[in-house]
Image 1: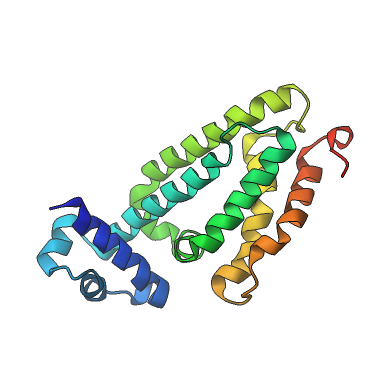
Image 2: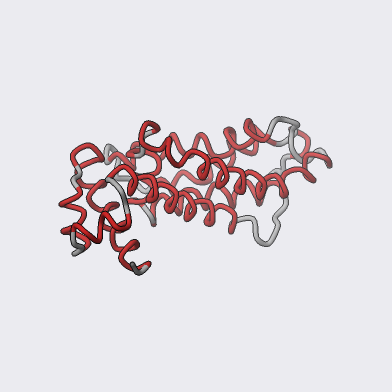
Amino acid sequence: MSASVRDDLLAAGLVVFDRVGFEAATVAAIRARARASNGSFFHVFGSKKELAGALFLDVLRHYHAAMLAALDPVPDAERGIACLIRAHLDWVVTSRREARYLFEISRSEWSEDVRDAQRAQNARLAEGIERWRAPLVANAEFLPMTPVMFVSQLIGPAQIFCRAYLSGRDRTDPRIEADALIACAIRALRPPDRINKP
């Protein structure tokens, strides 16, 4: 079975899940969207849940790639904060369907089968961020805190802010608040005497 059939099924799954949610989505609807036979579907995926898990990992990989690209070339502390927040907001807006799937539609109960792969992908993102952050912590450019706390202060507010946009409750482009989110993250992560004054 060619990789293109798998890719077609994943793309179709994303569209169908986005339209009707995971519970209401059917294998038949996904197959119809992908123009794939029943045999083709079950040759690649054992179930709708298996396709959903594979799609989750695929979307997660794309999101992580966008975030890590923001750290190349390696920026200073404030520039890195700005680059990562803008990368998150840009990805949410330009990949809205994928962002909705990752942050709004995916469910832990059906992603248990991909938990190890998810942990491995999350670890690669964390390692990439830590390679940038650790020297800056050592030079007192960042406040000392755990990597998990750092990321929650950096990206957490932007993720929460984007939820209304992803759910359709607010159609305003979240990127218009990038400067405010960046300023808040700088105050949360940088020692006060290291904050660059405008």
